Amino acid sequence: MMRLPRRAAVTTAVTLLLAPAGCGSPAAAPPADGRSPAVAAPAGATAAASPTAASPTGPRAFTLLATGDVLPHTEIIRQAKEDAGGAGYDFRAMFADVKPLISGADLAICHMETVYGADGGPFTGYPAFKSPPQVAAALKDAGYTACDTASNHTLDDGPDGIRRTLDAMDAVGLAHTGSARDEAEAGRPALLRAGGATVAHLAYTYGTNGIPLPAGRPWAVNLIDRDRILADARAARAGGADLVVVSVHWGTEWQDAPNDQQLTLARDLAAGQGEGRPDIDLVLGTHAHIPQAYERINDTWTVYGLGDQLAGHMFTYDGAEDPRGNWSSIARFTFAPPAAPGQRWTVAKAEFIPQVTDLGPPYRVLDLRKAARRDPGRADYARALEHIRSTVLSRGAAASGLTMSP
Image: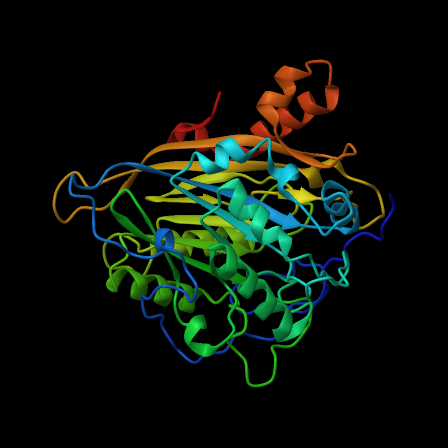
């Protein structure tokens, strides 16, 4: 199936070190109101996403898993309709192969790039996305705890799109962060709980494809601002978070290597505010459509780009289809509890798992390790596996302990 390629951002720079890198022009500079989040559970969060009392046996190690862009193009929506037998939309079969990985983690975080349309549609793919709200149920069924919702497509259907998306996530018990229905919701992270630890999840995007923030709603989506991210992370930790995870929608589409702005911001976030250990423990990047490197900077792991987890046929700027747009990695980190009072949780194990959207049809997200073993004659699987491995490790992460899960 042919579709016009997604367009790059052109000339407008984004506040705070992030160069144009999106499907359209970046939005205006983020509001500089200096607000910091209060640590409170997001509206509609389930018990699993809200702070609870620590286990009577004390803290224990836990796994946190993260995946890349969920980007339902027209053919993905059509597949969901077929999988539902023509009665509605069902995305569960698309995630079935990776469900054991996702549900096997103590915490699993997705990136929901698009907003949802009204029940019954109409639903649209590129360039202005409105996805069926049944995506949320499939993500919950797969085992996700939370999704970040800050992307260059967050304003594709204005405040109504944000409201429908977050309402659908609330209805199935998915925590969320990055966009908001009201100012109070915008000022707090998602709080997740695992192993006796409280994990604050924050999310930001470089822009919104030139769509201005809604009048009177400057808080509708979090835009990247270095100082704000650092302040939000500090406030979350001061409010009781044991770990802080930041999702950032950034980078240059179709570029394997992180750009200079990603590298600069990653170092700033890992350096913190210069008073002891940084507040941010993990940075999860999306937007480039293709896998990018992992890197440990000080005590903070950064995934520059996870790649697209679920997408249709992907085309570069010259109109050529590029299979890398259907390749991605799954990040999995095992956090160990503090060794002594006053110390921090630490990453005891860092892993990645190659993943692919098999274009079939049918369209299915696959654990690429298993797929390559099942069908050793698939040269495209072998090529994808090697590319993901070499790219993920291209900034020396192996020397910091990152391994590909066997």
